[in-house]
Length: 502
Image 1: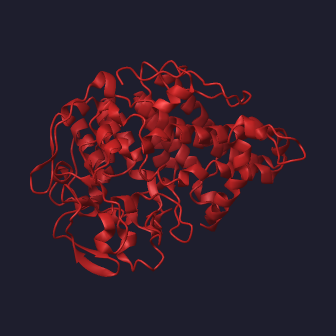
Image 2: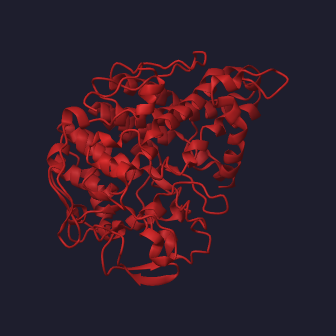
Image 3: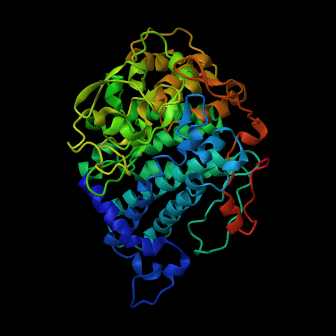
């Protein structure tokens, strides 16, 4: 993954080109302007690499929007953190707080950088193959960012702002789309273009692993259609991944979360990571680790599983022990076997699925030596093949079709007996057990299924059966989306409106 080090370095060269309109308005004899920059293949690669820089901010795919996923019944915050606790309780007191407040702007910055490529691609002197690759990357990255924004902040009453890539850069705020379907329709349009333009994963050199590829665009198309409740197209695109994508479930569930399988057959889209000097990548593994790591590493102690999640697993489900550590479980840490116990976990549990890198000596190079940026050599999945299978299963069930084949693919790998005439309840169970603690987003699942109000009206419990989080009030007409960051509204001078009820 040496190429990703070059990406980070190159992205700094492009920051002056993409930060804001004022920075671009400079004399020709100085640093390049937008008018003079987009000419060569090198310019294109440098500009494309700039899209990825913000992904390595510790709060982008480390915590950040994961605080919204933390609202689910699968986990509790762990260490006290007011912003996260207020979000989990659907309290407007979280608005304007740190980690969540900047997520909107960070994603629009990536959209802006992608739009620069889309706007200027025809000026580049490069082969059509090279231009197609980077245009496909730009379309995918903008679509991914729009999807994360739209699914969290948009609903039938208002979508999120759509930035026209052909328009001249402006500091003027853009009003919100009329509804979230406008966003999803745009995402679908751009992803279909990306499918046509991007190379297949197997066509990429190893140095480019982690960059967008054709199957990643197909998979995000399937998920977008799922959120649109367009079951026919969700089935079609998930099916395309299954038949044409050359993907397969790994034989063992635990192997999905090992660095040696970062780009194996189950890979769809993830966060490339390196734990060496100047570490970058998702810090989620260290964020979930025991606070202070039993005196041996600076774990952060957030996102602790609940008894409700633990009890969801059936007897014999091999995913349970891979996913969760409970008191007394044996595991390897820093080259030694330990028996799990915690002085930090409020629930008494810890997520286990990202722990593989910590089994080695902590100085062996699998874990960042900087505990303030506690990433590992695992490329944390954003979307993986198992989720695509479950998207197809859900789409089939919603159309009144049989989804036994898809659901039993997941169950067989987990060591469970097959289902006959599987139902939506079975689908919900498999999504929960298969994707717990991942970016697939259990909270958003509960919201779109209409299950959030009932689920959150129940308290959450720890390993000893005691309540560790009280029942919460979820108002579906308000809390089906999150609040737009207050500084976005303020900086827009009121052009961008807050979601109703927040």
